[in-house]
Amino acid sequence: MASGNGIEPPESAEKSIGEVVGDISQKAALLVREEIDLAKAEVGEKVSKLAKGAVVAVVAGVFAVLALVYLLHALAWLFVDLLELDRSIWIGYLIVTGLLLLAGAIAGLVALRLLKRGTPPTPQLAIEEARKTRIAIEDSRR
Image (cartoon, rainbow, N blue to C red; front, side, top):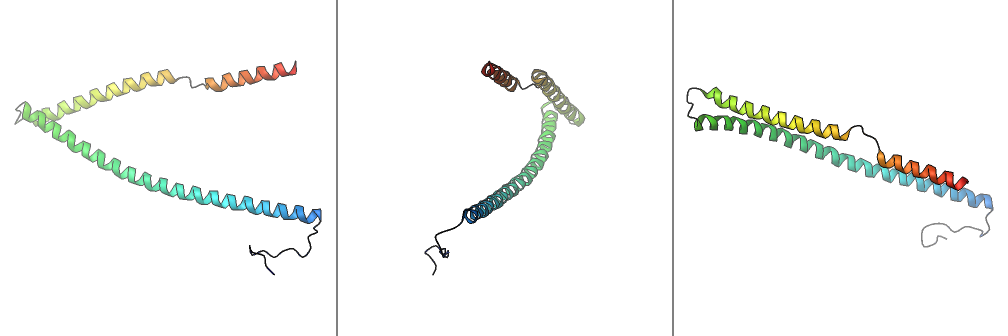
């Protein structure tokens, strides 16, 4: 006769300690395996979503780079029109190239400045916490 939860009731309410420990270890092992399977499924789903997002981001980046090329091309033609350089179109492109080099130099200098501020990369908080822990241990031994 099955109980309401689908599990057969034990024939005897008396179980040995060994049987109880065996049941507990089996159920604990089952629980751990199910938790691991759940974690694997969850991680797999998140990795799949991240991969799809990364692919879409790469496609967006390609379109952005292509749009930037057209924008720079239009900017060069704008300089040609503004300076009325009908026969010297290359001057418009030269101006755009100079602006790009200037922007690159400024970005490089800012990057260099930021990198100098971050070196050397020492974990100051972790070192301080380790020092406090060492002092606390030494004080507790006294």
